[in-house]
Image (cartoon, rainbow, N blue to C red; front, top):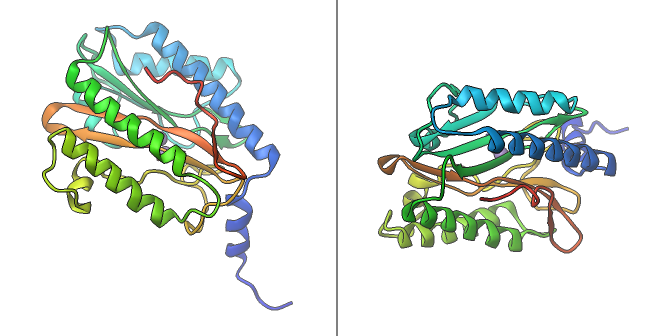
Length: 249
Ligand code: GLY
Ligand code: MN
Ligand code: MN
């Protein structure tokens, strides 16, 4: 046999999911949903972020699961604008929003889900406007996903749409990549599987890949950070959102 680099074959094996792998990820998503339900049932002003983390621990362990590859992000108020916030030790105020980025695990496959909710009552007008912008990019991204789409094309199209939203929100004055990065400083998604950012060649989307869709807008000067993250299966003609049942608001 000729010498072939093994890592290329391993990348392919890991980025295209078998039915059993998709089932494991769906299982992890479903347990994550139970955790989010538990957090929402308990969250109240005056609690600490780590108390909500404890509720999540409880729900996951009751389901014979645990946190996947990433420590849970449980961020309230201005902490929502800190990308990899993991201290989880601030106290929730009644006007806060809460951003959680979490994932349970099944058979070494983990979910990677973000939701942003108001701790008490409804979003302010401004928070709602930012939320709507994030969701409009989310929905447009879901429509774009299909086998054959280049990751690079996806990234460029998402940046354009995100830039339009950031202009509408009055945050930037020209729709350039540099301007968009100021408020959306991460990728729209990544391969998900045995690792949170799973092995992938990041060239062309293919059927049976599982990827995240995670638009976010972070405005430190206003203390508002909103991210919505779903886990999505690339199908023959498009994409299936595996976490669509987890409430968005
Ligand atoms: N929290 C890391 C990610 O969502 O990719
Ligand atoms: Mn995440
Ligand atoms: Mn992610």
